Length: 288
Image (cartoon, rainbow, N blue to C red):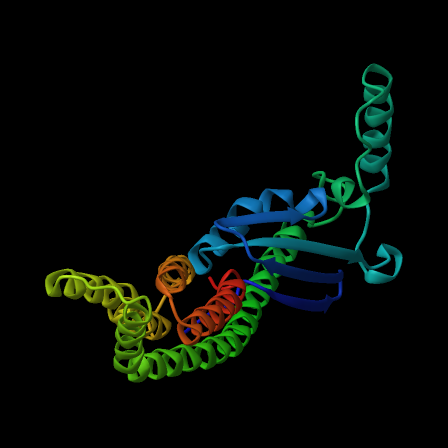
């Protein structure tokens, strides 16, 4: 299914030790570019978190923010070892004298120090496990949002493809009439100028005019490209880069059609094609 790179997800969970929440935002980006903001106490989880993203997403700038609000320890039933806490505080003060620019530890950092909180290792193992689980739920939700956005983009692209196909069919139907009109126009101008040219020269001029007016090859390629775009939209996995390439090919044919145009009908059609292609290209920038 087509997936957008633009999405947002927020997940929150409340436990007896505190509240955690994840906010995950993604926008379009050529490659996968994750960014994490989280309390230092959970920073060691970043490798696992990045690995989760790499396994499920391939493109997009993804900003992930973890918020943690601890519950008051006095009312939570968790005991703090006062002696160990005092010793740690004295050690931190001594360290600060030698390293005045050292960042101050957060309350969560202090609580994680061995011996400060009774059974702290098990408690924090549980906390980290819940943080990872909530992140997984957030990524899953983000993917669903990206798929819903992708479906809307796919519908918009199909509408533009339908319009392009209609223009191609219309110009193809008019092509014999356009070529015949240009041939007659050349003959009329020669008659008005009373030019007497060799029959072979006249034929050569008619062939040149016909070649300039004949855009059948460009129309065939436009139809082939729209067909390929539709096929790509049905593929599984990332398709954004291939669609972007196809937009370049469509635009190239529209430019050629415009440059070869010698009648107002094909000129107007080329302009309409460029508008439709640009509308698709802008939206395809958001497709994974």
